[in-house]
Image (tube, rainbow, N blue to C red; front, side):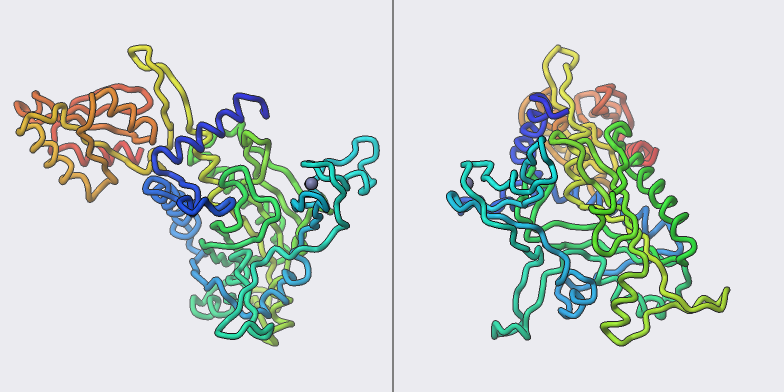
Amino acid sequence: MTNDSSFNLMDKIISLCKRRGFIFPGSEIYGGLANSWDFGPLGVELKNNIKKLWWKNIVFQREEIVGLDSSILMNSKVWEASGHLQNFYDPLVECKQCHNRFRLDSLPVSPADPEKKQDRLSCPLCGGELTSEKKFNLMFKTFLGATEESANAVFLRPETAQGIFINFKNILTAMRGKLPLGIAQIGKVFRNEITPGNFIFRTREFEQMELEYFVNPQEADSWFNYWQTERLTWYDSLGLKRDHLREREHNLEELAHYAKKCVDIEYQFPFGWSELEGIANRGDFDLKNHSQFSGQDLSYFDEKSGEKYFPYVIEPSVGVERAFLAILLDAYAEEHDENGDLRVVLKLNSKLAPIKVAVFPLVRNNEKIVKKSREVFNLIKSSFTCDYDVTGSIGRRYRRQDEIGTPFCLTIDYQTLEDDSLTIRERDSMNQVRVKIPEIIGWLSQMFNS
Ligand SMILES: [Zn+2]
């Protein structure tokens, strides 16, 4: 799908995001900061909706899963035990001429001899000679307190998972948990990527939604399959088109240092099939290592079998920004309206839409209509995220709401003053119905829950 029209789609999404307040380039008034992005008024709503729906599906709707919000800064021993200090490296090369830096494994390989690394060693930008490979740790390092001594070094977490592992015993005890036990966390993580890019797809600061699901090692394979199915079903429930999703299992060389098995759920982005979510079997790697490094016993006593063991961990892990991007790409459509004019519409699942309802007075110069519109807005604003718009023709106001994915527009007109009814116009079908104002909250609630 990497043709002109799909690259075009990415440009359209980026432009829409900026124009309508979903996403702005970071630090823009100072000339920007490479690959950093700020989520604007509509972006923060969409992002919150994604996180809320994940949390509801993972934590609220399941008895055996609980939540956690652990800190970003942790004792550096955590990263020793997790293997990140040792293994969380990218192979880095630098051009001796233009000084651009690249991940060695991202450079094109000579098709004649894919094994021969030397063939990659010329700069893809200027053709200059590249340095030999250096190992580059992806963790951001900083210092606790006033002195920059290595004893005070701490790292910004590159994954939320470790905060879960080091709290495993606390949670097991506090919640009187039994296996299977899930611990879920949403939070910011930081990776000093050499080559970020593709808008919000790969950034150095992003949010993860991670579940660590602790199970009896003998049941790990069946739980892995269970979560694979569950996670795909979740994307279905958000309305992502199934033929834009596929599963891809990692081969041995690709596997992260902690993983026994990993399957990516990939999305067909305009720049190619790429990871949306990773589902990993981390085995007992983390609990075992943290037991060893901390001297605390993190094993589990199984009352049923009378055995003591380190649970295996199944981990479905999603990048919030990647889900955000996939959702926007999937929802974007250009159509012709009833007058043959082009309309851009975000066909977002109504649970995801940043604004649920827009309220319009038909005209702005009729006091009674404006007053009634305000009453309607005040009536529904604590039940639904609402927008109130008086500017321009009704047609233009519809277009503006279509473009940000607002499912319903309510128009208060002359008839409202006579029979207390208003027009509800649905985004995708553009169908209109009249509903009495006292019934409006019930009507909308029913639509959003169906
Ligand atoms: Zn160069």
